[in-house]
Length: 454
Image (cartoon, rainbow, N blue to C red; front, side, top):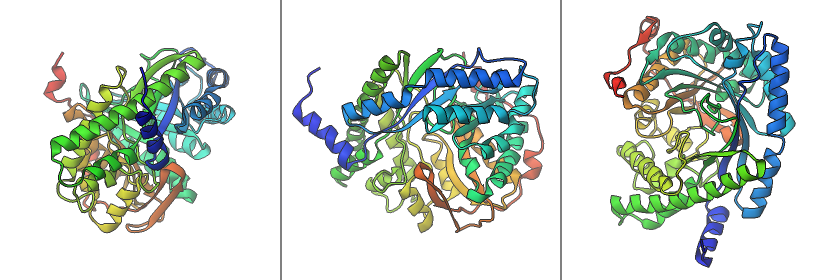
């Protein structure tokens, strides 16, 4: 395909002035051949496999950055859910595997490694229980390891025993990392309808239906979309607005596809998917909230915010889907509070509340993300928040998630600071009314009737 000078200049403008980047290149690696009855041998196999497959990942990404002039912000590895290989071992403490993952990630130079994960939407195996019990210590001991737990699906309903357990696990993880505002919780996600090819952390893992090794790409570009919407002005109607976003998403996705295919070719592995998600950063001008405000809202959170986000999410998906045949992951617009400067400003201004964020998750990816709440928030309240978000995902047949940080020693209005892409945010107030009797009932909230569709 011939590329015009106008298109070259347009891409340069996106990179230099509008924060266009590839948010992540993630290598998925299968661990299904790493099982062993000896936990030490499991660790040896995992370390050997990760360092073998991913040894050139960072160098390849850096070479592609120089060649095409598009920054690749994060280089990551995702692994088969660790519980699937760990439960064959003679140990009930899996934190040693997390330490091995961290050491392997350090050796190959990646930013994060995901897959300290379990799928418990219909119940627990013994291994699942061991992994869940190991999460707080594992995340406290490691720097790069990320963990995720799937507690619900549309076809199975919500495992409320798992939801209750995760509330306590999140609280303990926060306590063990209290010296850094509970940062361990920023590496822990609770899912409903989790995708198995997601390249974004902290929820990435390599699904059991995936190949031996694969490259998945997560694109970005909120700054580019914001500038396009701003240039249209208030005179454009919603059809024109949607069309402009679709065209922009197409261009961003094509850049991601190019990078992904070249990386897979150079590494000698399969190309997997493009995740179409718009992922913000704490940098000014790289905000989802600012896009919504450019549509005509005084502040993100004002009446009309959910409708604006629905338009944005739909247009991004439509434009991206025209640019690649391999869409996967989460694919939408992320609304993490601490990672989005515009969201932080909206919380500080009082326009954005936890309840409004929950409503917004009905129409976007992925859920209540990177939200700091008071450190004395009861574990049962956190479980109730997880249950609400899981219900949205189950009923609407979409992925939802909760990444929440009960910041030790902090109260509403205080701030937490994590640094880097995790950013910082004000601590948000939580509904103080008790839900403990409800979340302690136990058992399974049944699947909705449309789960019987085949």
